[in-house]
Image (cartoon, rainbow, N blue to C red):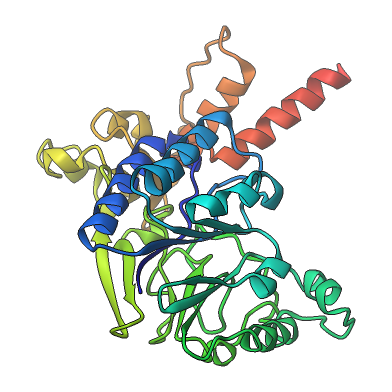
Length: 374
């Protein structure tokens, strides 16, 4: 059995204010090319297909097209689980019919235990993102109060279903103990209580994990994260993205890199260097950039100036802080602008970085509340 392991597609995600859908489509085509060139027998997506539980129509259309291409056009069996960013109900709509085309989508804990999927010489257990209360309900055991306790019960129940003549693969979306995170990930672990001990997972021949966005997040021969196929934060600038090719018959796991149309780079430089026309190669000037300025003096309109050369700047930080200027910056107030636009422009001027999507949403909510009070 030879399969491709990927996860954390986060279709619909925005990087600050930038729409990533075109890049996600391009990387999807690379994943498809790898699947065909490697002659895989199946493709695993270990959760977080969408970035939001309430995905917009454009994202839903994109995912539908991707799934149809892989499963109906390429006739590739799919093994998919829901992650913490997915809505299990919405993602799982129609799943009872999907099995007819070998599209196995599990969104509930009970499915992971009661419905293992056998393809070739391998038995797959598809464990979606879950919380301890789901395990307490399934096992009717109120003592399963933590993730490690519940996971031990889940693994034991899965082992009881092991076919002796098959390899056994777990597909899961979870935080494994000892793994490292990047800034773009959303986790709910508190003091390690929500971390799954890696030792519990050693009974499987391979564990295909999703949830963390770097394939270097965990170093274990059999338990691996594929990471996200795109870089989603400055902390991932140096991370290589890709997919795993797993061969259960040969017992091999091989890495296949992916490249984005727009790379994400973290750059430390002076304003003078950055404004040189040849500071970055022409094909890199359109990359997503997290810039750290070495200058300390105030540079008026620094974001606007640099974005004239580098349109996809994510943020600008100062390596050594910013020197105080005796003269306050002069701001030209354009009274005809929308107040929210003025606030966003003021923030960008003062902080040398634009509002994030979450900050923009807070601003919208606050302004709506103020208008309602008036």
